[in-house]
Length: 253
Image (cartoon, rainbow, N blue to C red; front, side):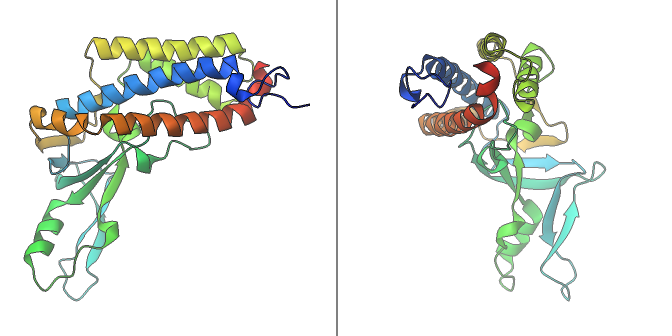
């Protein structure tokens, strides 16, 4: 007998599943609020393509031009708090902007990330006719959610952390009602965070020293917002369904 792949009911399929519809509405609200929060914060901090950033995070590794002409073109190095490195922001990828990370690693850093180019390396290469173009690996990509702009300490961060913890243990010991209340909590705290114009925390080892004017960034991101939201929602819903139907539903129904 055919049954719903989301809640195991034999009375309907996924398309007519009220449980899936409830979760999808919550996830849509969560994605929409978070996209708006991220875009508002990128604008607030002046972060966009061509902005200049000083990075002093010691874990920030990158390739730069090798000063030794007899060696390879690029060398592997890292930033230092005593002598920060200057980078230009080359790309902001927001195709999968979602505040909740699923245990299977489905929230790909590459689809919610920021890319940097080492300014000195980029400048020297462009001015030197004898140098070949920068190799593809010269750009550094870091995640936005867990590195550049993080949720500050408070009820929103705690609620997202509680939900992710339950997702990691496949909701074992947490019933459907409690699980949904956490989802509603994330939505509620996100709405409160956005309406109060609270700010995500900018990575302490990153300083935007030449940002893009807010008016220009607002126009830039507003032209992309609809596609960002649609892409984020489509991807997140698909991966949520795959994880929930395989790992969680047997603990809820």
